[in-house]
Length: 310
Ligand SMILES: [Fe+2]
Image (cartoon, rainbow, N blue to C red; front, side, top):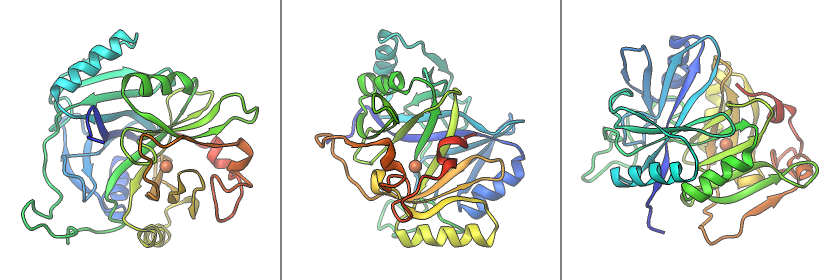
């Protein structure tokens, strides 16, 4: 598949209760690089193997959660087309001028029926991954901490995920990769959508409160790197939610844990390559627990997965 249209998750702006405590967590423990601070006081960070300026933007606030999730699109013509397509579909869009976010071009922003703010952009300054573009090293020797490689995906909780799914599939060109049915079996409780051959570039969970963050996920290179991330969490008393284990759903190797503000994050190793012609996989609600959908090793449903969000 030629990658066109929406390319990937590009940035997430997170609300944190104590900025410097959050910077310590994402920079020093997770191993992200701090790439800037702006006049609003926001702090910008990138994972070592990302080429663009920033993927996590931290904003101090009086409650945790996610302000917005941004997706990078192929080019400016694609941005214009998708803006027109969204409006034709009945989605109201807002233009955020270039430069409002450091080193980032104009953004097209819209609010989903789930209450989440999503945005598209075509331009962000490339700063490289520290490995050179000519005769590159296999990894950046300056990596520290958990050495997360990229912002991989987010799971967002809110009402009416069916309508959010339709916008991502019908307008933005994502495809459904996996889904978990609700207890009644008549609708989806969680959907996993991809714009690539990743198991998910975004996921939605049905939840009564709008605009909630379940987790942002950060990719690692191997199961061993996920375990090592767990060691670093333990050494630094980072509160762990679930894992290390494997999700049955998506097959991903995982640890769920919380940042100092209570935003859940995931250290994750992808284990699927679902091409767009593959049939979606379906999990019954019961399979989330005993079937190992959530935790394939322990085969149990952790209550926090359904109830704890920021
Ligand atoms: Fe995840």
